[in-house]
Length: 481
Image (cartoon, rainbow, N blue to C red; front, side):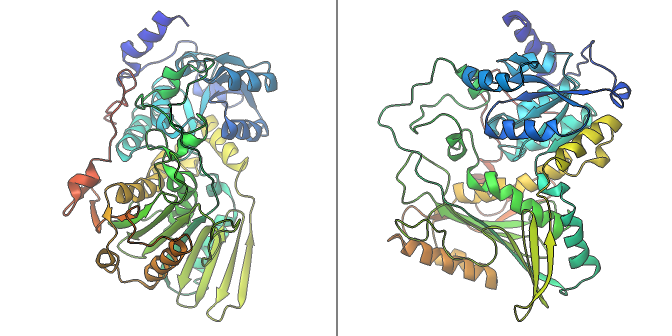
């Protein structure tokens, strides 16, 4: 595709919301028995993992590879020598040789790449978190409806059969009685990403304008361009959007059975402390979600329990998972396994799963073949809601002010009090405290469930983070389904 053709791709209306039909694309009915050609946007670590999973799905051909980083593209091309390669994702999207697209880019590209692909008639598997901001997630759901496309979000644990067993145990059998509260955890060590005195020089092998896409062109002071974009608000969503979306999606699925889309109120805080690096997202984060029924809290830390240690701080339940507190005991769940205990701590049941990889990708392909989004385990609307909890937790931090014990005390919940106490002790082990200037926390923010806008106290500050500013030529379009 020439530069002129690329400009036409955008100017013709593909990026502005117009319906496009690529003349060479095979009809959906034909895909029922044909090999499905899948194109990958990004050749990074997670994308290469996904390629391995999709390879195991019968009838799937890894047919296209795309990455603005020529070094990564070349490495992956050696793995799949028959696949066509492109530097510009618009070239892959416009190719009539590609039936479905996998988006495994930096978070800030997820929605725009997905929307462009669906406008062009492709079905899409998009990695979590769906969105970089809540507004663009809604546009992506609207695009799936408008263009009648199959869109799966990569929370693969949804496809683990174990989840249905857990739901039966909690809801049908009511083996532990009424559910009272939920504690969610993500504790995992992450070191410094460095802090340069001069901006990072981008390697000439990277088409940096394409890498940036919707993000702002700002100097980078971390040591590495790739992966560590997670900890920069311009391109990433922090640990809350990285791992938090998995564990919160498990809770939405197994505890609420998706009956709660978004929380009604949220209070959250934290800080990026100890490391003194160029990261912006919190490495200590805590939040409370008022769902209108079962309250949920989440604790997150990327720091060791103390300086020099290689262990995470003490916490109840799995390091990356959740604890469901019930009147007759508790259930502790995590990727691939879960256990239930009675009120005295005696183990009552164990659950074993696969984690969902391969099954989740196969689920997407099944839905593509049938052109039936109801078959999807994480249809885009479901993924948008789970991502929303993470976006809101991040907003509560970003719209916060210096930590206030009075604000923390506005939530009356034993699990919240325990979490705040743990966070205080955790910080103390690093010679910090909750009232340190680096720790901030919101008031209890209220969300209007119809408009998905904050209302009441501090609404203006919080609403400012619901939609980002896009670079010219890479704007996420407003879409009416």
